[in-house]
Image (cartoon, rainbow, N blue to C red):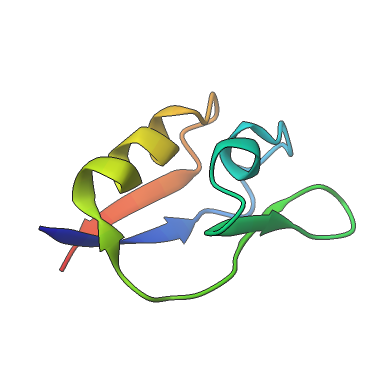
Length: 64
């Protein structure tokens, strides 16, 4: 199964855990806030693992 990630920007506090484990999927803007590199779907389990790194629950997983 595949999923897309969404970032709830106001919730993101820039901890960096998500883009440290998935630099091919996420990056940081100038303020350290997570940004998606692409809107292409990724493996659902990987998407869930990435989202689980966020202590603010700012990463949403949408199954496609």
